Image (cartoon, rainbow, N blue to C red; front, top):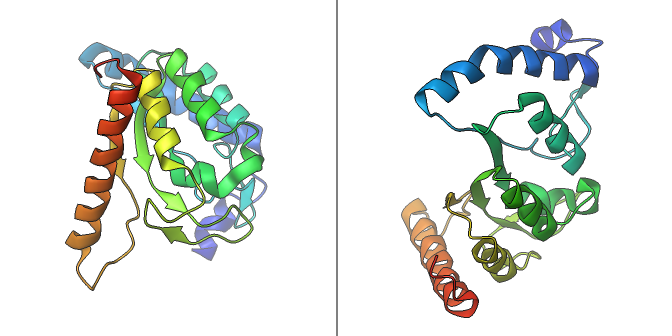
Length: 189
């Protein structure tokens, strides 16, 4: 790992964005031609540097810049609620405002639905109903903006030594608040 990191010694955010731009220039034409939609996942944890290297997907503005670089209807975001909650105020925009912004531009393709107990500098991943994030408000906002992408459970804590139990619990919880949000919003989504 150390040798790999040494290869990137001196990397700047601008250089990293240029590498992103080169990659996107290569893949976007094919993605558009065959109808593939690509999602950008946030840095996890969303901090400006990790291992001495800059990161470019750890703020709201970083996401906006990346989408401007892509300039394609086939490139959007995977809004990881857990990452957004981890970053808290460091994002520069709260998770509900981010959902509204990116959905309003048809750039919200996927949602990782998870919760954490607190924002950085230290957080613990929790069950969706046990963290500091208001997951119902998030689900309701997704309904208000008529989100039609996929929302999936993510980083599910272990329950009784069986990963299927935590997954079943999380999906059940998500379905319950989805049904409530649909009933309250009334958009039939």
